[in-house]
Amino acid sequence: MPAKDEGHTLKRFGINVRARRAALEFSQEALAEEADLDRTYIGGIERGERNVTLLSARRIAKALKTTVAELCEGIDR
Image (cartoon, rainbow, N blue to C red; front, side):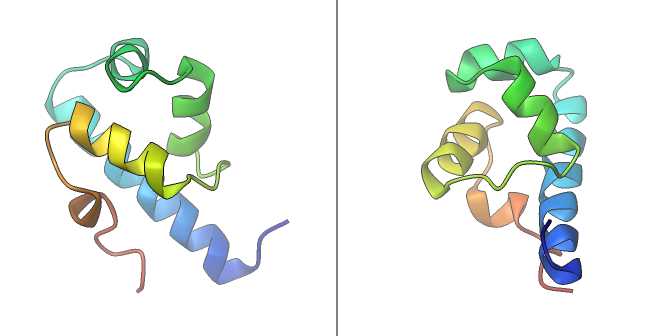
């Protein structure tokens, strides 16, 4: 189980991914296909259950037409 601050980091990243995906009106399935990842993996990220690798974060950011930095906004608060 991640420490409290680690859990916050994962949750915040997931919230940012979900918000960007919703703004683009992508389903989890569409995002997963565009990023070449599994839909259940995207769901786990959005729920803060997955510790995403930098390479996966980059793929997600590219699919969402944004940057990894933007998806990480607020994770250090």
